[in-house]
Length: 396
Image (tube, rainbow, N blue to C red; front, side, top):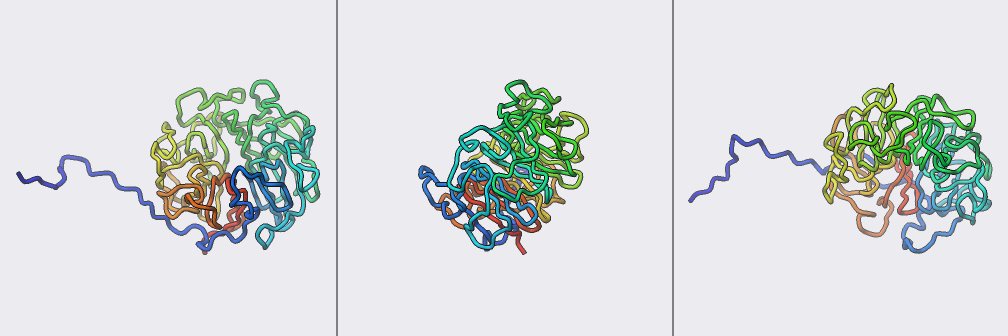
């Protein structure tokens, strides 16, 4: 019997494969600067002592004016370089959060105040104002100008009544002026935005708060400012969130990385009403799917696995695809529903994953990158699993 290998013309064509080949995005020579990297090859069980150059689980970093600020998360402090250094593993100039360079501990092992920290995470700046998500103190700290000295206290606290408060939602229910495990911050169009992760929402404020105890005027992820249900108490969909972490604008678009649902939510125009559902997502085939890597072991150009940090740089939207230990990029002018990423960093292609590519860390590998920010053509990466921060330029 002869078997025909021809396709049945009455059947739909087979699905097109998603290309794993990436276009150039980051300098192929790797990062131009690595800080804290002398600890990258230490075993995780070996503690990293705080110093002027060491980091432990860094989860935030940004260039503020000419300065560089790093959330040295595991040591509960900010490290500040007055000028972006030229040399790898350079000593910082001063810190905020500990009494000395060799000290560590939540809130400096004392009472919380305007210069102590407990798991600092995201950073935002408009070039002058510095905003830090002090996540495990359930608050956001604001310096109205770049701090210039050791343990300079913040000017304003958001999420708590004053600098002594550290309880989630102040020990009560969620409100417009409380936060719970707030991991991300942004400044967009002069407005403070908080990824209030533990309350499964994004808070939007009018301007940058000038006084303590400010209240948000707008919320996404919940229908109102007093609800904190996972996915808004519904099945996963276009309204609710699970673990929002970072917020970015692209022209009129607003984007939120919803790490717990393994996606990026996109509003085509700036939302105008509380709980306004997003228009579409990246990382999932539709608004209702939530599995990491689309329920597969390996990623592809359309899949995400716990995307935390996200930033706009040059022609790119770049996300830290954290649990895949890679960066992925979409061209800004191509953002649309379920569009595949076309750029990748720290992996050979868009079908690969693995902490340090399943090897020992090298200069251009990543292990659980947590936060990304941008200044000009330079991407600032908090490579948390390697206890370091990278400055990596876009490809020329």
